[in-house]
Image 1 (cartoon, rainbow, N blue to C red):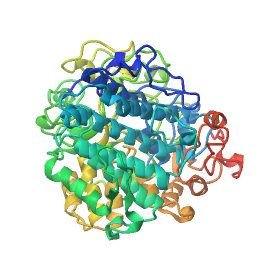
Image 2 (cartoon, helix red, strand yellow; image 1 turned 90 degrees about the horizontal axis):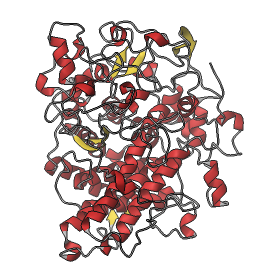
Image 3 (cartoon, rainbow, N blue to C red; image 1 turned 90 degrees about the vertical axis):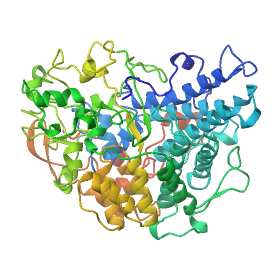
Image 4 (tube, rainbow, N blue to C red; image 1 turned 135 degrees about the horizontal axis):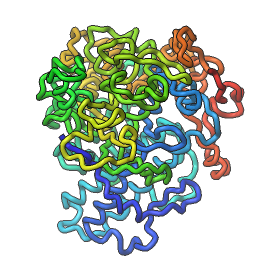
Length: 633
C-alpha cells in the first residue's frame, strides 16, 4: 500500500508559473526563467510534468466557493443516484442536482483549473526539445514524458468539454485569435482529444505505472475508449455500440502530431483492440473482494472487529485480513487501479489560491460525503456513528439507488450506508437544517474512525504505518488520503462487453460481486455499470451517451431516470414525509434544455467579447426562473 503520495507533484514547481493571459488566466510561462533556458535538462521536464499533474489535486482536494471542485463529484450530484442535500446554506450542491445556478460564475472554478492544466501540458509538449536528449527523439525518457504531456492535455480537455460543451480549443501556449473562438466539440475538440490519447499510447512505454499516479500506455488505451464511446453515443447518436460496425459515422479522422501520423483514423475496431491490449498485456486484475477498494476495510478496523473489545464493525468481519484496504495489492495502488488522483499528508487549513489551494493534498470528498449526524454537540461521537466520521453530508444517495439495487448484490452494502441499520450506525439523528435526506449515506470514500484513535473526530490514517503528524488542526477535515479512482480495470471489462456484446468480460465483474452472470443486453450493461461505479461520477455521462443530443431529450434515458426522483419521500429539517420535487420545473425539462452541460462562466463570456457563447438552457432563450436557484426548504 502506498501512503501519502501525491500524484507526481513537486510542490516547488508550481511556483514557477504565473497567470497573465487575459482570457483564461492560466499562462504557464515562467517569469524569471525563459524558454531559452528552461527546460534545460531532463529533470526540468519532469518538474513541468509534475506541475501538469498537480492540477488533478487542485480538482480532487480542497474547497473553493463551498463546493469540492472534483468534476466526478459534480457529475455524481447531477445524476439520478445522488441528491444535492447538505444543509440549508449548501446551495451549490443543490444547484448542481437541480440543474440551476445561484450566480453567473458559480461553476467557474473548473473552467479555469482545466484550462490551467491544458496550458501546462502545452508548455510541456512545446518545450520538451529544449533539452538535448541523449539519443534524440527515440530517447525513451523523452517519449514517455511527451506522451504524458499529450495524455494530460487530452484528459483535461475531455473533462472541460464534457462539463461545458463547445469551448475554445487551446493547443498552444501562444493563444491566437482563432484559438480564442468557441469550436464544435463534436467535429473539432473530440478528434483532438482522441489524437492526444493515441499519441500518448504510441509514445509511452508498454509498462504499467504501478500506482505511481502517472499515466502509462494502458491508461491512454482505456481513455481512448471512454472518450470515443461518449463521442459515438452522445454526438453521433449510437445508442447500442455492440450493434455498430466500423462506419464513417463512428470513424474519427485524427490530428497529425508526434505519435499520431498524418492520415490516421480511429475506428471502433481500434478502440476494441486498445482495450483488449489492456486485458492481455496490462497485468491488471480485479481485487478478490470489492470491499478491498475502500478505506473502511482497513486492517486496523478489521482487528477491532475481532479483538472482542469496544466497538466492532461487523460488516467487514468476514473479510480475509489479507484483503484489507492497507494490505499489499489492495486499497491505494491496488491491482485494478489504472489511473487515479493521489494525496499526501501535507494539507493546511487556509482556503484560497486557484492552483495552490492548501487543502489540495487531502481527498476532501471524504469530508463532503461525511455524516451530518445529530445535534452539534453530538456530531461524530463514536458511540453514535462508529466507524464513520462526521462531515458535510453533501451528496446523499437517492431513494431510487437504494430501492432499485438488489440486496443480493454485495456491492450495495459495500457502497452505501443504511442509516437505519444499527449494525452500520448505532444511532443516527438528523441535523435541524438537513435537506434532501434519503436514509442512506455514501460508504465509498467515507472517512473512518477507530476506537484506537485519540478523539471522536480523529481519522484512522493517524494510526496507519508511515503517518507522521496531523495535516490540519482538525484531523476529520484534513486526514483523507484514499486515492480517487479515475479508471478501474472493471471499467475496461465492462466497456469491452458494451462494445462487443461478448458477456465474458462482464461476467468477471459479476462473479466478483456475487451476482448471477447475465447475457449481454444493453439494459444489463447499463445496470452493471450503475452498480459497479455507484457514486464514482461515471453514471451521469453514461446516461448522456445513452441519450444523445439529437433533440429528443425529454424521452431519453437520462431525462426519464432523472425525473424518476420526483415524488419520493425524503427527510428535510429532521422531519420525514417531505416529497422530492424539482426546484423550478422538472428534471425532464432541465435535462432536455441543457443536455447535461453546465453554464459557461459569465465573467469568461464577458472577456471573450462574443467569441464564447452561453450554453442552451442557461441563456436568455430559456426563462430565467427555470435555471435560477430557488430556496426550497
